[in-house]
Length: 410
Length: 218
Image (tube, each protein chain N blue to C red):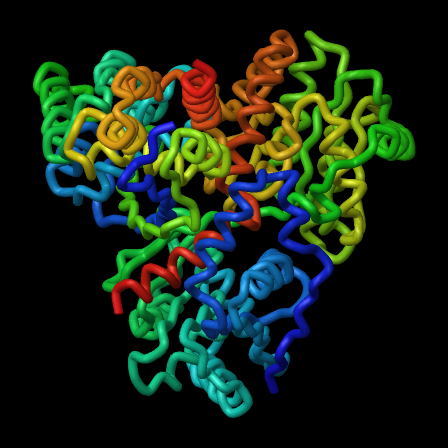
């Protein structure tokens, strides 16, 4: 039923020293020294694909190298289970829930089946997202510390689905959210853990300028001219049409190109429709580059971000907004909407510029293009902010701190 | 070179951020939150902010001031809140009282603005610190300098900024030890004068190392 994931060990903790500095890496080891061979289990619902699996693929080797006895388990289920959890996901983001009432029993039955295979014996058990939430049913006493890590926005959940899940969540010892805005009022302690990026991943590692240049040229983008870029799925909530409008305003004042790069248009009917609308809005403007990229385009995305003059994220709604984090990490000035987790990353006029409209977005881009020194300072401060708070090593540190806090209270 | 009877034990701290119950969507609610929130919230949004945003050396003092400016568009109140210097406070109760007083006075004088909705809510967070000793101690000024070079941001913040509340003195761990254990009062005072609002944690640490090296050379 469930499977234990093999833990990749390709990147070593020491590889982060050039990024973080020796004292910061040494301190991770100091914090972990009191947690040697403490057992930890992380459980989620997928080994590949999606932000949670991507993060666990990076986080777990770090915690293992730091001396924790950590296991990563992935629950499994039939198509009916994943249809239900997909419906949960949409409903927890505020959508309707149209599955039949017996779907809740099916959900619980799959959790129960997974428990037959999983040995939930660790001292710290971290359950990611709603899919495995009912595994806590196996808890017999309080010898283990159970934590529910919620990666999704629960600010406006469908009451039927949340009403079903909440009693399960309340049985945990604590919950972790990515933003206070995404959290619920719960009777258990709630912690704030920001999502994170890995500075050594394909999408974020340093690239040779030559590779950046050749990637831009491969897509027909002129590296010598100003480049404005939004990396996002072709999704209305990312407002690509708004980005095109903002670009058209900016273009009245500056010679520039726009890059709209993302995926999701080939396997998503709505994505295809959005892409068609964007193409229509762009018309035959040769300075707009619409790139429908396949999922294995991490290096290309990295190069597009690094080659950009300004990064845009003009979302109408957003989760945490890791594309903003990626842009900031590359020392790029970012203009983004003040929605979701973006204001947690962009402190207006300090680490980037926030906007509330198409016109505001255009104005802030014009301001940056007119003031390159300010743009450079914002980029540098943005990178510093990401280094302190939104790297995978910060996530590792937060988990270590949580485990130490629990041990100190015992 | 004098050897201290009591060595300086370097420590670090790691903070867990807990989401507190209080949320403010206008200035009146901020005032109420300041009355009701825990001391660890006050610490988080003032002392801990200096670590969170240490690389911003202009225009950023504490979370309350930043919110008053960026989300409420009240620059006058923001300036007043930003002018509070945490070095003047030996207890969080005193700091809370002044924060509350400034917001209350503004609300009394500007009742309409006090009720206006902010762009973004202010969420109160609590900073839960876990202290861990580093395998690092110093008995001489040279060892002290070598120890400083190995400090992380968190360890430096713990000894140089958060220490005031622990010591209940207008000083920091470094200055306290330099004066009381090595009789280096003048160096201790120079270290304590470093402006933590206009320096990053790195630049403040570099300045201390430079002051210590100058003392070693003299």
